[in-house]
Length: 254
Ligand SMILES: C[S@@+](CC[C@H](N)C(=O)[O-])C[C@H]1O[C@@H](n2cnc3c(N)ncnc32)[C@H](O)[C@@H]1O
Image 1 (cartoon, protein in one colour):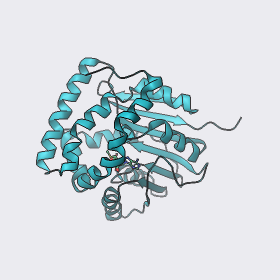
Image 2 (tube, rainbow, N blue to C red):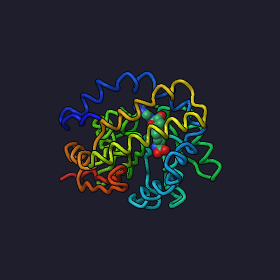
Image 3 (cartoon, rainbow, N blue to C red):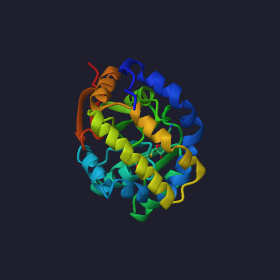
Image 4 (tube, rainbow, N blue to C red):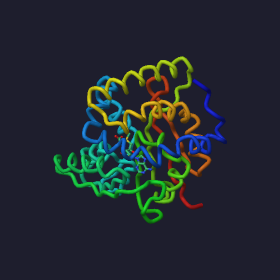
C-alpha cells in the first residue's frame, strides 16, 4: 500500500495510471455486472447498501418540480429514491452504460416513475449552461477525471443550484485503509464467484482497489470542489471516513 501522490498531481497521475481501463475496459465491466449490480452491492456491503442510499439522500435537499440530473446514474437508485420523496421532480439520468441504464429504466417503470435517460460519457455533459437545480453523483467518481466532470457539473447547474456527491473515499487512518482493502478484495472475489462474473469484471478486481488507493479523502475532495469554484462546501463521513457525502453550491453572480 503506497501513500497517494500529492493533491496537485493526483488527477494527472490517476489519469496516467487508469486511462486505459477507463477508456477500454470499464464499459464492458458494467455491461457484465448490470443484471446483478444491485444484489452484489447489497451482499458486498453486508446489507448496508440501503442505509448508504438513505444516508446520502438525507443530505440532498430538493423542492417539488425541480430539475435534477443524476450523473453516472447506473441502475437509477438515486432517481428512484428522489421521485419516491418528491414525485413532481423532473429527473434525468446520464450514464455511458446502456446495460446499466436499461436495468435502471425497468426499475423506474416498475415503480411508475419516468426518468429521462442519456447514454454518453459524462466528461462532456450534453446539456445547456445553468440548466439543473440539483445534480447528484454517487459511487462513480473513482472512475472519472474528477476535476473535468465537476467543472461540467458546475456549468450545467443553475446559480444557487446544489451538487450532491457520494462515494467510497480514502479513509484518514492507514490501519482502517489497510483493513478496508483486505475486505474489498475478499468481497470482489466472493461476488465474482457467486454471480459468475465475466472476464472483464474479473480482470478489473485489482483496478477497483488501486482506484481507491489513488482517490481522495473527504478533506481533499472538499479542497478540489472549492478550487473549482463551488461555495458552501460541506462534507459528512461515516464508517471511519470510508464513505463521504459532499454538498456544494454554484455561487450566485456577484
Ligand atoms: C458503480 S456504478 C454507480 C451507479 C449509480 N450511481 C449507483 O450509485 O448505484 C458506476 C457507473 O458509472 C458509469 N460510468 C463510469 N464511467 C463513466 C463515464 N466516463 N461516463 C458515463 N458513465 C460512466 C458506469 O457505467 C456505471 O453505471
